[in-house]
Image 1 (cartoon, one colour):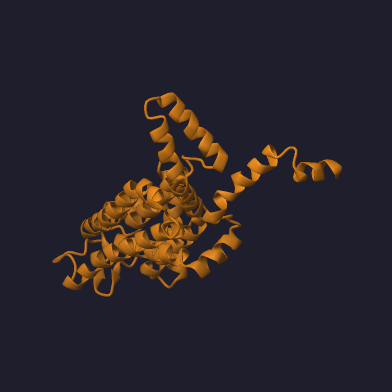
Image 2 (image 1 turned 60 degrees about the vertical axis):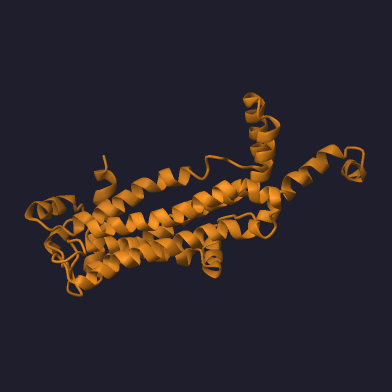
Length: 290
């Protein structure tokens, strides 16, 4: 089943390899950048959903305390709150499921393109769906004295190749901090004691993830090929650049991504409530007269 996603990506990576002067590292970097840009709307939607969920945490906590002995009323009040503020609790997860096949395909494409054994070379040639690209096999897999098909550990690669897992961890950590700070920065300044208490658990989880994930990817980088480390580093750097405010505004305009400022999330339902409740006020009379 995965071949449906993997084979086109392997073909695209091989085509980029030929286009960029038989430089497989440049091909990996360009392909990673292209995929990250194309999936930007999904990442932006995920961040927007996370931001909204953080905004309503104080009200969610009040509902939990008010109906702590009645789970049915608690769920009903929670769903009404979601509806009131236009929040979909599953919106943050959906982009991850959509991105998963793409990420797996890109990751596997790097592995298959950097074939290290005769069997893998035959497998690579069978995955190319554009005629003529099989003439490029085997791809050049030596870069800066490092074998891209092998892990960065000696004696499979020079000792200086160990800098790559360190870069994987550093860029992953920075990427995680940048993306999460963009979600949290607008709420921290205005948070009262209840808001801080409500977001304490989420903040603790965020801190744990920002430590665990980089270490986990660093361990992966020690076991996987050097080419995969380049993919991890490129993906993290692109993520950091995407959330740099000037570049993010450009991407939002290009992909027509609508991001609601956090201070407007509460303003929308408040406005709607006034228009419904003040039926005898000036606003209603003005509308009636028109």
